Image 1 (tube, rainbow, N blue to C red):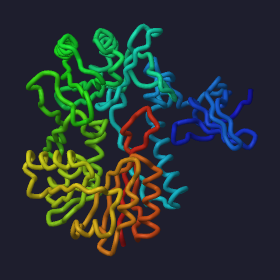
Image 2 (cartoon, one colour):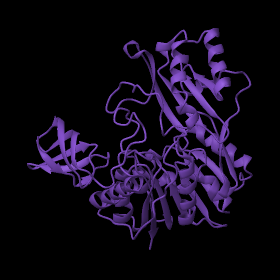
Image 3 (tube, rainbow, N blue to C red):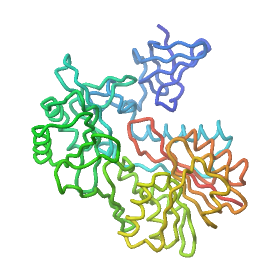
Image 4 (spheres, rainbow, N blue to C red):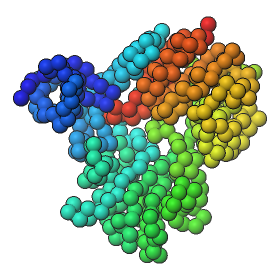
Length: 432
């Protein structure tokens, strides 16, 4: 068995080595380590492998806190010390910007960091009846598998959810349709946690009673989803209160439904908004666009700083929620919202928004290529780009810098998903 030295980490958190002219991607290996590996996929130019033995360990190797790490696919980097995880993500972002866009930021911002455990306020947990494993399994998928991990706790979920995973297994096993509940969605707000059970068949009266009793005993609001997203509703009549999260620095409270998109990590979200407002610097008298605005996560802080904000989002439900949140926070006069498919943006559709001094862009993983390509002569002087995918950020940066006359003033990462390879980042582009 070959011995290799790990040179770096790739964007999935795997150790990268070279052997006989091939790149070897080794799960569980860290930079600087000498290791033996076992390949499970061989191609002419590369191999994918798992770690067999560490001969010389990295000083940054850590003992995983979770006993299910390595089996559960929820985390991939618990074996790496926390600050080294952040540094690795920063390198992934910088490498993407250079190799894809041939651009480097003038300034690398300090990484945004927060709690490393119990941070995941949104999660979709799988449910599966597996008789040979004792009945019902509730948890994340196994690594690189469609199977549900046999786990009794989770260190990244809120503690109230983690400690109840085994009780959830027992609860669902006792229902009349345990094999027709494929998932549970976790949505946590400032004051309560909602569990949404996806039920493919109707629940019996006894099922409803069991679920409500569990929710009352353990402190959860129990909801179900018998069909599409619009069918989500609470099991208990009158329990239709929306969840909310607060942004104390901006004196804001944002309401949301359990299935609305919100950021997973509440503490990092607050810090990310602070950094975004520092870079965007909204001023009274300015007119600013918040593209892919969702329910107003960045729009309302912009308005609170005194600028007029125009939020644009493809989901009509989220646009309605954003308008409601603006009104509830006394910002309706400075915040307006409209529905538009930004993946099909054109120069004409952007012109209809009117003159905009600055933009904030927070797209999904696909990025904002149509938006940046549609920029014309009346382009904003400053763009703050919040990204959840370094590759699409780099692709869009190539257009902004190479074609639209912007300069990449700075970029940095936010550790939104500790112990995973997910890279959240923020970048500032300026014209002139």
